[in-house]
Length: 440
Image 1: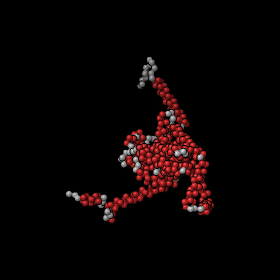
Image 2: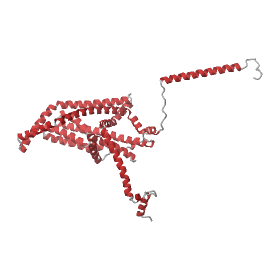
Image 3: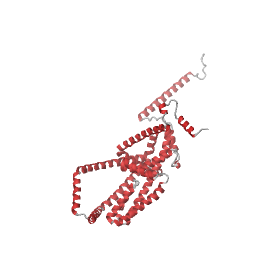
Image 4: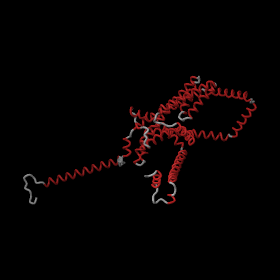
């Protein structure tokens, strides 16, 4: 009877061969396996660090491309509908979707900025009144006199004067940042158009670079990841719209409806940054109400913001996300924190979409299909596994003319040969009533 200790010894011996050096064989098998795993993990970590470092060096290109990918996952169904149900081709439908997106974004920002600038004077006056009220309250509560306040003001002005060079350089860096933003917008729009019009062709070319055995699994895993990414974007759009609408309605009810559109746009955009965005946008709305209406209305606005965020977190997110993007809250929190540490605001913005995509692809590769309803893309899979076909040579007009001339010459030569053969045959044949010659 084999004891557990004996079986364990046999398992250890199975990993050893006669050619194993003695100094290696003396090391416990657990230590050897740990060492093997360790150096492989070190190589993987180093490779990941190099890739991330390279990406951070070209963020001016990477960030617009990632934004284009996210928007493409959102607009692809619209382009598909236009292609199937209208006379438009894929490129024309992509152009229509892109122009519609630009018009909507410009319209929203124009309306928000006009309302904000129209009320800028009122905000400035109310803010000055609030600051003066705060100063009076501080003087009364902490027994501060004007000399102390003036001294603090003078120190602040002195610090500003000392750092004039830094402020000027910061202004120039701001101008450079604006230029980078414009360049990024152009890159994102061009990338978005080509992803919408020929994204599937680009992807098939990328997959075609892989070994034949890896093409179909990679394509099917990508389809699951793309579905998860599309579901995430649709859900975020709906959740952001609901958040922004709820907070804007609260501002209208509190009598500050003239700021509803700018706050709607601000909350909508900030909602794409998980966890942190909703808090910051809600705080800005509460601050505006505090400046314009006082602390009582600010408390009411705080209650509205909390209620909207609770509805979002406990009702909308679980109901709309479903199983397409099933991420644990801890994964969301750690993903956002890690992304912010690695790449700042951009990292926090793209962390959850990347995690959702990677989660869906890894689940499929490990045999747990997150979207079995997708099935297999048999048409594309057959194209990916088909042997390469020789490329047909396309004739130029000059080559076609030469080929036609050569064929005509061959046809004429063949006709002449047939005529000469007929003449020889007719001359050799005996005429009617004529005796054939001897020897014929």
